[in-house]
Length: 103
Image (tube, rainbow, N blue to C red; front, side, top):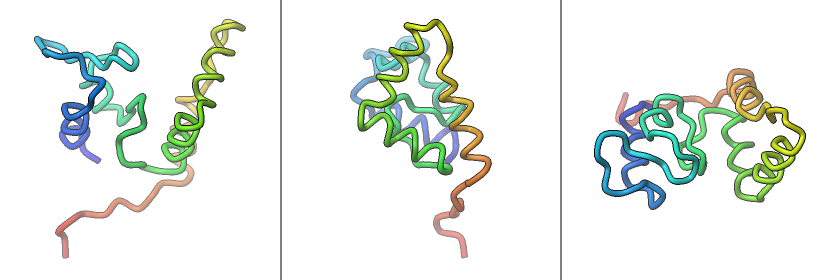
């Protein structure tokens, strides 16, 4: 998924702080949506999955596991490692990227 496609998803999101003047902020985590789009990392898991890591992230967000892990990580003062694990799983088991409209 391209940065432009991800930005389109961000601009349609109900969690985007409006109006955007300069940086457009995602109210889910306070980051600029351009950062999300370039990293392919939506905190609400709304981008298409690039691999197994993205799918696991979507499941943990939807079930509330992610919020629980984040709370526990803050309580013990250590990062959860979710982002690194997500990227490792995406690299290990990527999904096939299809070019829509290509022959």
